Amino acid sequence: MKARPSERVVALARRLCADGAELHLFVLASDVWRDLDLSPPPRIHHPRRPEDRHPAYRLQRLLAFRLPGAVSALVRAATGGRSDRPAGRVVSAVTSGQQRFSELLYGRILHPAYRMVRPLLLAGMFRPEVRALDQCPINRIVACDLDAVTLAARLARRHPTAVATTSLDL
Image 1: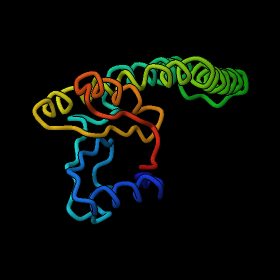
Image 2: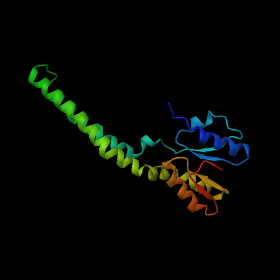
Image 3: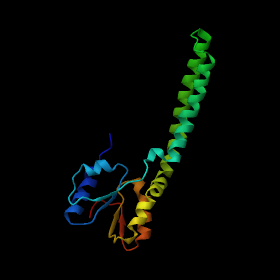
Image 4: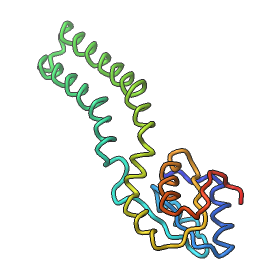
């Protein structure tokens, strides 16, 4: 299930649409915004591929879960599926150690690092859509969450006369 945008963001979008503004939304999940029935409908921009297909996202999942899981699978295969006590203990110890290692690696190192580079990755994923707006007159740029600030800054550099803000109040 896709996360629904906050009520403040939806209220701002409704107000801008009611005022007759041409609204461009940069979103990861476009179907959520299409279901809101904004009138007139905004132009929805979304990346050509989902975020979970980005190489950086896939690399962190590989390092945290796939590779350690492969080691655990090799140990299980080496025991030949026997259920005798020593082999069972080894498999159990390796499996639980792999799970703890994966959770620590992901939670303490990889996920925080990904959170830091995610705004840059998202801005890069939206680069073609940003370039397509070069010919459009832009009056206001609103970044509605932290990950959108980098994208908004890039838009503001391309459109220096536009007002760029993180405030949802007009």
